[in-house]
Length: 222
Ligand SMILES: Nc1ncnc2c1ncn2[C@@H]1O[C@H](COP(=O)(O)OP(=O)(O)OP(=O)(O)O)[C@@H](O)[C@H]1O
Ligand SMILES: [Mg+2]
Image 1 (cartoon, rainbow, N blue to C red):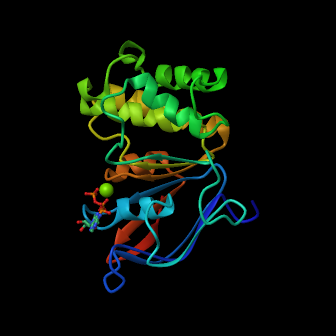
Image 2: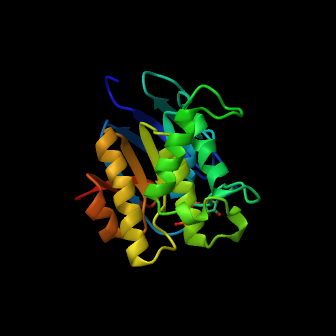
């Protein structure tokens, strides 16, 4: 882990080589660091996070995980997508345990005691105990967002990529979700790279603030 948990070098992201959304990105996510990315809608923030998570190929350049892997070692990278990617017919508990299994050896029933304990803890941290058996499709947008957050925390990742994870939440719920995630990150010395449209909220959480403008990722004063 000489340089960082996650590094990108000369990265361009987007869907067409002739029209990259963001280009020339050099970024190192160090252990324990919280980095926030802001920028206008449609500029490519989600595309950048998806590329860093290994879900989209880079147009140019490299994403390096840990000690030189081109894809994240199993369970090391947690992702809270903007579009949540939950299994809609399955229960809250089932969705969260899927995250916990990513970080452990057995992915099949019967789930390990460790995976069940991680899931129980994450569900409690996100205030979802009352909904544990409810199918995702019967939850509100904010509740679903909390399930996606619980799923990522149950994985106990070293790096968390979080795309607008505080969206659709009322102020009190937002505060509890924010503190659950911040408690996790600080207690585990994990790193977080978050996309956040509210610049003041980003500033209040992050060690470093980055802004996407004119196809470039720029460092701004935190
Ligand atoms: N699968 C795709 N194929 C082609 N173009 C896409 C695809 N997904 C997104 N785009 C386009 O890429 C651009 C950037 O989208 P992206 O979702 O990364 O923006 P964003 O900065 O996250 O915006 P927001 O703040 O609204 O979430 C948009 O113009 C979008 O239409
Ligand atoms: Mg987005």
